[in-house]
Image (tube, rainbow, N blue to C red; front, side):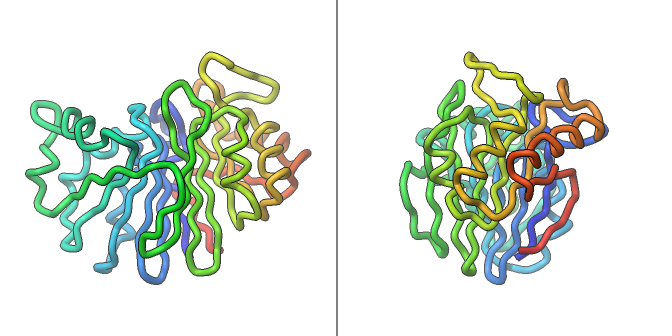
Length: 247
């Protein structure tokens, strides 16, 4: 399967990166994690009528502002957006007139679907667990085509992150803080903490994502984060916008 990192920044866009959005193409599906501003690029990759599934971790703006670009697309197969309880009320209050085009007025059908913590048998198996953040935030574990892909966005160290990452072929783990930093009031990870999660979970590979652009203004700081992560979990790499990998 192909994985494309469409947005690898947290918080805000820079010339280096858009806010968080991860695109996955499998034989039968398109799967997207979060809708930061990198979402505007998905029509570069959606060329077939496969079902499209978008999973939102939470409603902080850097994870949903890309939904403003939904009016750019016309997907005849429609789009399913999954999120925590209240997703319909929240998104129809934000992605609407006078701020944007109402979701109900798009040229294609968009279904807003609530998802609860636990296992869900969609056309594939996905596990959803609460992470440790300033607001309710979900991490996801996707099992498809005999591969396991874990998405751990905004979080501090928690048991659920390690449960989601266990034996994963790829863990995409946030790296908002610099090496050695901590923020108990607004939980996030630094490269060492992210690497510890991947290491303890016995994951095969880890991609660092969701870099805070205030702490990571250039590729120099990102390379340092990668090096620090590798000291603990050697098979770590820094994801960059538009990077494509296959697993």
